[in-house]
Image (cartoon, rainbow, N blue to C red; front, side, top):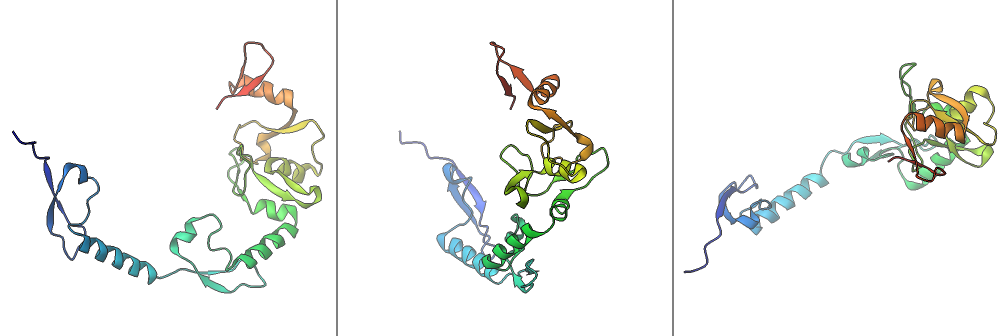
Length: 210
């Protein structure tokens, strides 16, 4: 007896001007779209043509000395910072200018303010652990957004050894009502009481749960 034939499936060519039925074997069933290479090439060629001639949104460069209009791909607007500056030089100049503006002005532009008891989420850059960060020229470095929020309210930076802790446990939150000053030990005890920490068998090291 000969080898049994693999079952064949009937599909419809997805190139609309064709739309003819065609058959494929089982291994091609999930990826076959076109009945021939000719239809494949025509479909891809038309897609590229449409993309090249698609209407592009017009944006205005956020760097005020420039402020000229420019066009972007629609997909660029989905990226963080997409459609903000017309060129890399404008981006560099605009970023440098932003850093010279008052800290409070730059800070509040990056906060999503909600209800008084809700989390106010930081909308800009973050550290790897999820805490917000913002450049502070007087300290020559990035500082946690929640720490800066405490500074803007009390006009003094936390003393050495004092953390600004979250009662809500939401790292990007900068709502002052959710922040409290405490030592590292107090922060660990708070996390332990909420079940966010665990003690090892020896009783020395504390590890955050993932």
